[in-house]
Length: 334
Ligand SMILES: Nc1ncnc2c1ncn2[C@@H]1O[C@H](COP(=O)(O)OP(=O)(O)OP(=O)(O)O)[C@@H](O)[C@H]1O
Ligand code: SF4
Ligand SMILES: [Mg+2]
Image (cartoon, rainbow, N blue to C red):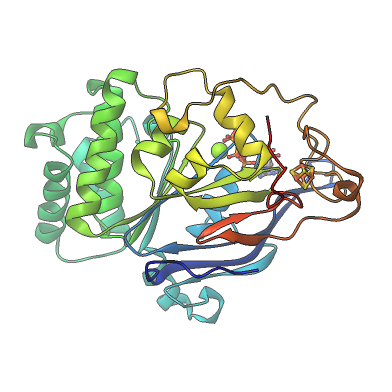
């Protein structure tokens, strides 16, 4: 079922069709279905959030979006282009438009390289411009993320965690990407500076027209920065919609449980009265439950849920869900 949205939707910068990513276990006896049939668009200029428990497949999707992970099935179109159709040279240039930033800036920065050398490195590898042009671009990127010029001569151990993450952002910016996947980018930072770094992301988006995919465990971060959010469970999306709608009128029992379990203060829209404690362990992505994957922990499961996987449907304008009973008037998850 589809419903028309009140506002025209922006064109997608990335279109994901039935994405599947599988891994062999180390003993090669089983297959981990890390991502198993995910469909979504990321719209140009938006911040698209992905939330879900540990191991649900968020990072795997992020890595696939920036060509670090080969899909096992399905397709990802970037600006309508299937990378499989590009020559090697065209692909190398195309992939620079899509960057990723991870949680730990220490892992991204070489401790033996100065900050300026680290920021210069992607430009040098891509052989962009002359040496002088590259240095100017790198210094501009450092300035843009709010670091004084003299930081260029320092080494990573001479910077705070927040400053190091700014360097990593500057490094990604030098290649002038269209889209940046931000994977738990504030999770390792002190609470006191998370807001500053999130504001920096927002400023850069406004000034440079960037698109973000923001991956996080943290519902408060999602509510602060994302226009739309997808909720992931065991390799699949269970809900996707405008952040406000998902937070205020969630359709899926898993989303409702996630919102209720958040221990820290949330914006009023995201607070729920009663905490819902999900029973049971998260099943293995090697052998997920039949039918609806959430059924082994869902307080509303019915026999049908074991027999048939729910369709991914647009139940309200721009608001998608995978649950057989999400549209029943008497379906009131508690
Ligand atoms: N290279 C790999 N080889 C085998 N299994 C993998 C590999 N990478 C990820 N997985 C498995 O795929 C599933 C999804 O992992 P992923 O890292 O995408 O989860 P996540 O949602 O990002 O979790 P977290 O919130 O802990 O970062 C997990 O079961 C994980 O163990
Ligand atoms: S389909 Fe069934 S088990 Fe799955 S979320 Fe809906 S009610 Fe729960
Ligand atoms: Mg992850």
